[in-house]
Image (tube, rainbow, N blue to C red; front, side, top):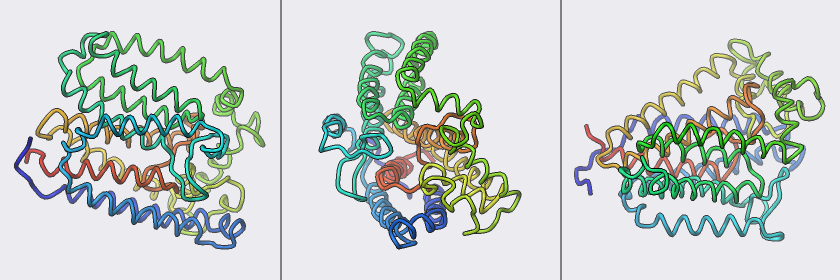
Length: 366
C-alpha cells in the first residue's frame, strides 16, 4: 500500500467546486418558472439541488480522506447490495415509475436511483479485478469473459427498468477500463459487432426507441411528438448567440422545453450564457478530464490507476452523450450532465466518486 501522502489536487477540487456552483445557479434559472407553476415555489428545485450539493460535497471531502484501497475490501459487498437494489426496484410497489422508467426507490422527491450507484460499484470492483488479472486479460475465457459477464448482467437488469442512458454509461465505462487493462483489439472488434447487433435488437424491441432514432435523424418529421425535445433544445441554443440572453433570460424554460433543469440544462445554459458560456463549460470539463487522466497515470499502483481511469471515463462518457443529445448529434437517452443537472442520486454519486479520485491524487507520483 502507498505510504507517501501529499495534499490533494486542489486544482481538481477547484474545478469541481466551480461546476457545482454554476450548476446550482443554472438549476434555479432553468426551473423557476416550472417550479412556481407546479409547486408555488420558484426555489423548489434549487433548494433541493443545494441540499444534494451540500450532502454530496461533505461526502466528497470525507471520502477524500479515506485511503482509496479501503474500497477494494468492500467492493464485492457493495456490488452485491447494488444487484439486490436493481432487483428490488423492478418489484411493483417498491420501485417508483418516473418518465416511463421504474428506476427509483424511496418516497417523493427524496428517492435513490440504484442504477447510479451500480456505476460506481462496478468501477471499484473492476479496478480490483483488472489489477489482479491484468496478465489474463489477453485471454477471452479466463480474463475478459468474467468481467464482461458481470457488466452485462448489471446492464440487463438496468434495461428491465428500462434505462438505456445509465446502462450505456456503465457499459461504456467498463469497456474503457477493460481496454486499458490490455485486452486484445480483436476481441473488441468482435464485441463491437455483437454490440451493434444487440443495440439494434434493443431499438427494434421498443417502439419509443425507434421513434427516438428517427427523430434524431429528422426531428421535424414529428415536431410535436418524438422530435419535440430536440427541436426545443435547438431553439434554445440558437438564439443564445455569442453572449446569450443573460442569466434568467431564457424563453424556452417557459413550458417549451420539458423539465429543462434535468437532461437539457445545457440548452438553457447556452441560451442564457451564449456560445462563450457553453465553451467555458466545455473547457472546465476538459480540464477536469485532463486532471483525472493525470491522476490515473501517476497513481502508485494498478488498482489506483484503473479506479481513477474508470471514474474519469464515467464523467467523460456522460458529458459527451448529454451534450451530444442536447445539440442534436445523438438520439435522446435521458442522461444528466454531471454537476450541472438537477438530480440527487446522480449528483451525490458523482461527488462521492470524485472524492475517491481526490484521495488517489494524494498518493500520485509528484
